[in-house]
Length: 360
Image (tube, rainbow, N blue to C red; front, side, top):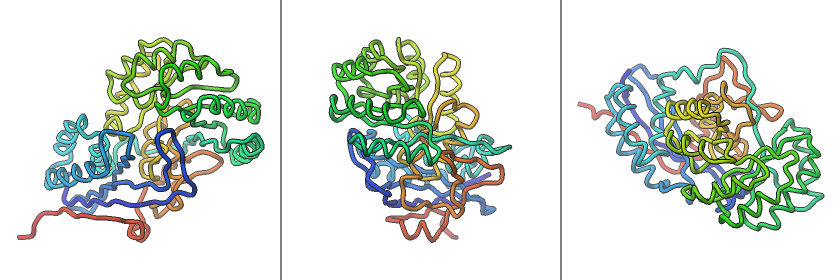
């Protein structure tokens, strides 16, 4: 199979409501979408959203990378193109993942084929600050079928602890709670927060300190009342192996766009399992394309709610047939394969560039 044509798109997808994490507030998703075709007209799509502040990459550097490699892979067999892109993952993981994902869909990667219906429960962000607002939110989300609530912390230590306690009281052990600091705490703040928690109903505490602050994260893990999960620290198999040596770190979280696509993610998952680490998967700021890919990858591995819920935050999706979702879970169906609705894409597109062989 040879790559005959590559088209790059960038879309702007407004969110239903602002989505706040420790380092920014999102009001829209701006994914780069890679469209690949072979000579028979088969199509594969990939995605990379590179939020400012989340990586050394930027949206602009990702676009430049995709333009460069779109020209390089034209006319190449998919195996050769994959090898070329895999070598580039360390320097541009987000952008390389978009290209590699498009090839994976073009080739119909086996992990994307569901043989029987499978439900992937999703966690849901827990909004609200006051006791009444949180209580009403908990009851509504339980009615909608969610059983894992995610609390974002990292802005105000005392307020964070009070808010976690209010969610615990409102949930009353009817749902599991996860906590994510998005690397916003110092070592001292992280240790204070983690050692002050009441562990009742809390499944894990995610990434308290900066990605490269291994000693600080280890210090927090040592005193934490709940298991620690590393997220932004995990890019490679070496990172997984390092995490497994830290007392109190029981889980690692993977995002395909950060580790370099499907095959690299599967290798990291297998290594984590060998080392006795539990696995979480998913991206809270991705369109339904990447969310479907990550749900498919995690289908046989996930033992917890997935974090691939970005598509639920956007006002509109890009699929012709929406990604099946009911009662708090993505439903993977054997007869489902994503197709992009051209009208929806056109109406949300901010730039586009096509690469094809020059006609004689």
